[in-house]
Length: 311
Figure 1 (tube, rainbow, N blue to C red):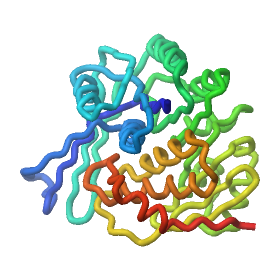
Figure 2: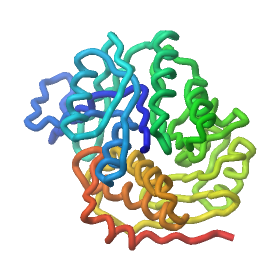
Figure 3: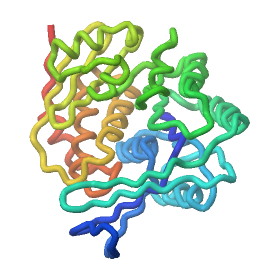
Figure 4: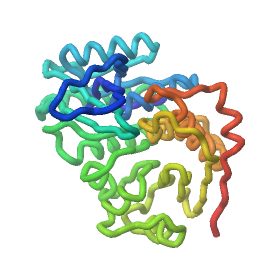
């Protein structure tokens, strides 16, 4: 079973508008509300791939109750630490080909609540084979909180895939024990290394050779419509994807993580792992909903992904 962790979930609310009028009334006819947060998108796609998954993290208030209801409707197993503080809303206003986001920061967790979650997490791992940790940490938790989760998982021999950014990811990478896989983009690589990382093969190979990444088995550098650059062990790969019609790119990175997690959990070949990850990412962009894929299209697009080993 894959455990998908979201420490700061949200209800994602989408407001499509023909034109966004500032300092005026904007009426929305169609509103989409989704149980959101990066890890919940990951869990949703894993479930659609018919792989066993459990969503976990921290939830609170009526918003937290709504998230659980939505996960239950989608028959996604879940086991969250419940707190009294209210979880958050995240609003996306879609207008004139642009997306304006209004993101609540979410609840501030106490040290005791953080400790309580780690205890719950350790218990959940009894039935886990792989863990994905996605998104930002809630306020109140130490920046090494993800590393604490990694240590608990490592002691049980469970592989961990981390998809985060900023200080919470850096704290994981600064430790001796590393996650099994990470999925940064070039901007996040640049932030981690304190230097501009360009999308060329030479620059990317040099960046991924940095000591910060020593000991990580899989590094998938997502490059949007250009596919990905990958270091697996000591080998490098360039992964290219076909041109597709993009409906909604939000959550495509999370869908990529889901495809990666499922293929790794099934112990598939390097080529199959990379093609599966790129395919689920593409399929998400082709759907209006965030964290949704059409598995009927999987085989077709899987076959169009090209994986080239780089010497």
